[in-house]
Length: 303
Ligand code: AMP
Image 1 (cartoon, rainbow, N blue to C red):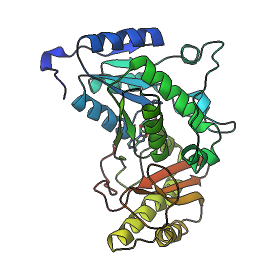
Image 2: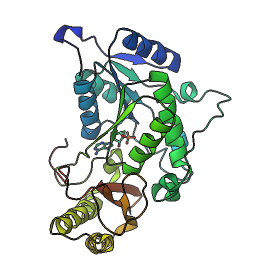
Image 3: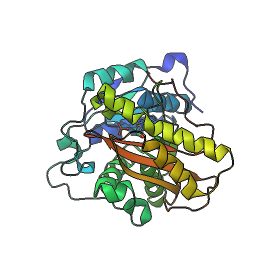
């Protein structure tokens, strides 16, 4: 648990390059303080805030990275449309008592001659998001590895909304002996149930109404699970039926998987997850639920 006291706070420092980040983080560790890392692509919302608050509560110092990682976007994906709001993000970091905001340029993160990629193997990176977004997890794994080896945090915080990403990061952090504990935080939702995402800003009101079928479908599956349904295909049908009520929603996949391996399951068990990916207009949305858990579909905790 953190050892900080009220007078230890210093204002937010912005760090632009990896060498400075390493120096600052080394200094924190040398002072015997614990370090939490919250990787983000900016456009910070209440989901990111929750991660930052968790790190602040559990670690002496918190570093937030703000970097729209180009190598995790495929050709034709929304890299150019991705919202960027660095000044507002730095203000959020300052407000929440973040110690370091790491906001490198693309050239600082991937300088001329950069040639390394971190790749995982197996179903975890080959199914679902991995199959739909070739190269996506390679880009995520590469940038997260760089952050973990540069900052060497005690803990790194990720959101359950990106469930497959959480599993990938957990795997690589363990496989590469980073020593970082990967902490997965519950999905934060808007009052209407939609999982917060920087991409939601691109939904028009009608699109947003259609998109609400996603949390509604997860809620229906959760209800069926709580009533005793344990057949994964039956749960999947509940989700698909509810999604079909929003015809404008273009469903990419609905999957019921084991949370560690991401392999499909036939019988629901304690470590399973229900995953949805769908496109509304040009906006790709993903959501997840572990049925029967406390996380449930708590709403009204967003901004
Ligand atoms: P992003 O900036 O979208 O790459 O997200 C940075 C981190 O925030 C990732 O670990 C995400 O899973 C997490 N995150 C994004 N949206 C939410 C949300 N609605 N609730 C909780 N965590 C989230």
